[in-house]
Length: 365
Image 1 (cartoon, rainbow, N blue to C red):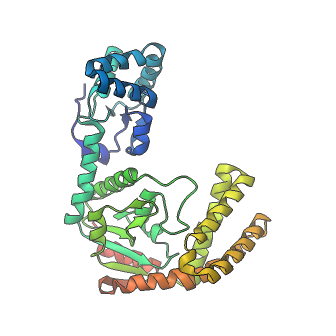
Image 2 (cartoon, one colour; image 1 turned 180 degrees about the vertical axis):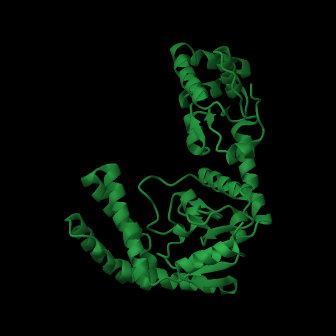
Image 3 (cartoon, rainbow, N blue to C red; image 1 turned 45 degrees about the vertical axis):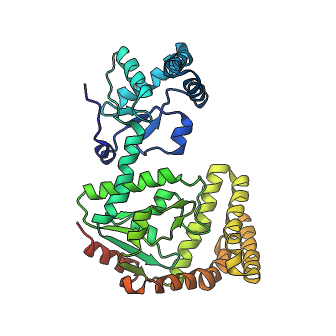
């Protein structure tokens, strides 16, 4: 039998399959990419046991737990765990602290003829290990930053460099007022977990430097960890300088064409178009104060015209009538100002491919 483990970082480096035995509400608040939720107790059952523990003590709570999870209920859950064990012989199980829930499940599996290891310390120990990575690694690993105006394909750069960390991918948000996707953004905990695991994997792969996209303090509703953000504010910057027409076509594809396709695929043709229209209008409304009433009203009218045309099947080019002035009058001046604040850290300027090659040469293994 494989032993219970406290080699937490190895589990993440190897994408080891794990069963999360916590209740669904706990899993939804934060989990790990390689974990699957197969809870010992439902949210309601967990609440009842917790109340019993507070009022009558541990022994009574354990007894109640066994009463709630028995018979057919236990058999159904056992079958799910046994299937996972058969399909993932290299995996592990864990609960919150590696205590009663995981040890009870481990014993039930053993009684059924399957000896399966657990993670010592459970979710709490795993989470602490990742927080240590995200807090400690910035102090020992050099960072490089990719900057550039909106539409410069910085995220594409993150996905084509082996030592780059895609923070917006981890957040599941593009960072701008039009940054959300059809599916909800990741929680703060999941964002931190994904980011830490990616940093750990890059270090384990032998990279000596990491590359990040130039980000603000927040990406949508998530905050960058303090140590990570502070290190990014001192790192050298390579700036992508692509022409306006190229950047506009990228944004048209990303903000409009792709989002229409995603919304209609998930919600159907009619409802998808309605929700995509709401997404576009809300994105503009979020920056109304910064645009000013008159400019906001003009752009909103152009956007509504373009939405009507693409819904009628007349193509997407009319969206350039609001995208172009939005870039020229709002996003570009704002980024120029931000870039001026870090001018002493700029080490390279070039088009997308030139920046890519520069970073490849200077931050290789």
